[in-house]
Image 1 (cartoon, rainbow, N blue to C red):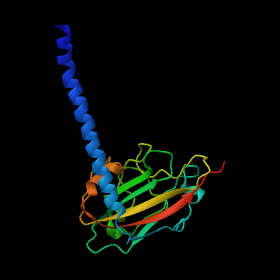
Image 2: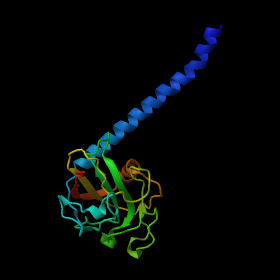
Image 3: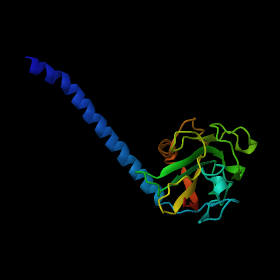
Image 4: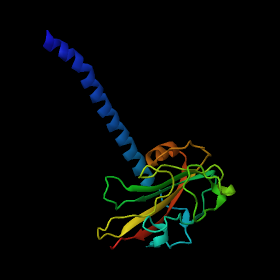
Length: 204
C-alpha cells in the first residue's frame, strides 16, 4: 500500500520533469535554428568605429582592464525600410559554452547614425537625444550596458563581434532583455545585418 502511494506521488513529479526537459529541448532547437538562419544572412550594413579598425586591436581604454569606455559605433548602408536597430557584442572565443555576451542594445533609432563614445550603461539611454528610447539590455555578467573585453591570460587573441541588426519596425521592446530574449523578439523583422570585429589579448 505504501509503495503504491509513493508511486502515485512520484508519477506527477517524474512527468513534470520529463515535460520540462522536453520544453528545454524544443527551446534549444528553436534557438539553434534561429541562429543558423541569422548566420546565413549576408553582411550588408557597414559598421565602424573611431576607436579601432575592422579586425584591429581594441585599445585598452575600451576594455574592462582599462576605463571600460563604450567605443563609438557607427552604421551606414542600412536596408530600405529600416525603422530601428539592435546591437549585440559577443566574444566567440571565450571559454564558455556560448559566445560570452558583452553588450546588448535595442530600440536604437536608425536615424541616429551612431552610438557615441562613453555612452552611459544605464538601462534607459536618456543623455543622447538622438538615441531617445534606446535600451541597454543584460550582458553576460547580468548587468545592463557595455562590459568591455576582459579575456583571461590564455594565449588566445580574442575576437569581439559588434553586430548590428536592421529591423523593419519599431518594436519598442521592454527593459531587461538578454541576447537570447532579443534575438527571439526580432526574429522575422530583420532586414539586414553587419558586423565590426575588434581583437584583444591579455598577455600578463
